Length: 352
Image 1 (cartoon, helix red, strand yellow):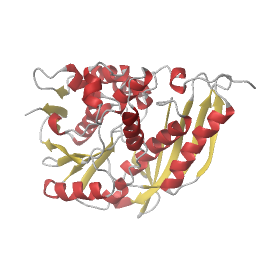
Image 2 (tube, one colour):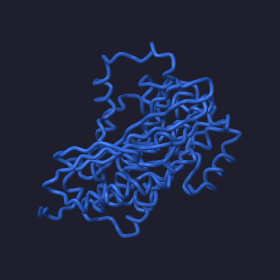
Image 3 (cartoon, one colour):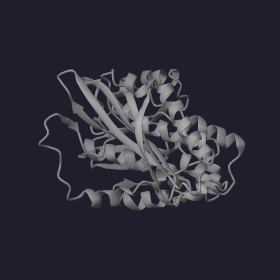
Image 4 (tube, helix red, strand yellow):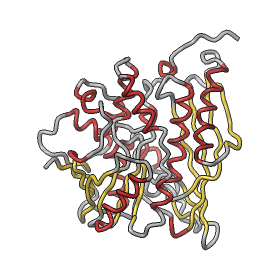
């Protein structure tokens, strides 16, 4: 079969924005509004109640199973890189719950009249390579003929019961740590228009294929109270989930945020995704920005992150040591970006 060579991102209606293809938080809330909660299932420790990263089922007094799935349309044109990014992103949810992955199942949707078998094989190879790096097999999967290319994984993990880390257990006084730089969505928008430099592309691939495996190590530390990963809803969206679930205010210091090297410049030039705008519209009145904050800086806060970093809430006296642990584990951008305080469930951004 002769299949034309096309850019993968040109086949995605989201413009190649990866996790930016997620439904906006407000839309998701509407869709789930009348769904029954999982409360009758005593062994379901984490379900849909707080918008956490994965489901957690307690097998016995000491062991839990973690289950998650994540998939999206191409964020880059290189099929091998697309597979790597999608797999890294999917596995992240297990690490964000404090677990270790044990196997994955592939999810594949391909427009077979538009993408060659060779390209599909490269996508699958990229995903398998990341799974091998995580020490897990791709043990099966499912594929369909779809109008747009889709790839991702369903991932199963395990953890000790006392090491489950929810997004809803932050405590007033906690320090807030971010482990990876922001700006992936902005870089994706620049890729779509051919405006991202070669060095910028390399930086993007490096961060989006960096497994968040340090989450499993952090979960063994009792000073780490809550963990989530920052993906399609942006820093503000996932921080807001932590604030709402924990019933407190998360304060973010905008000047302390780690950014990809070209993110600020590209944002000022207008390279933002539609998802960034939808994210902002979905937060409602639960985000307080400083007066006069430029739109481009707000877009850095709402930028959808494909395979972003971990957002960690920890005891303040241990924050510096935890940052050192994370940095030593291979996350050089990790830093304290704010704090949790008693107050309304909201995000407050500071620039002072």
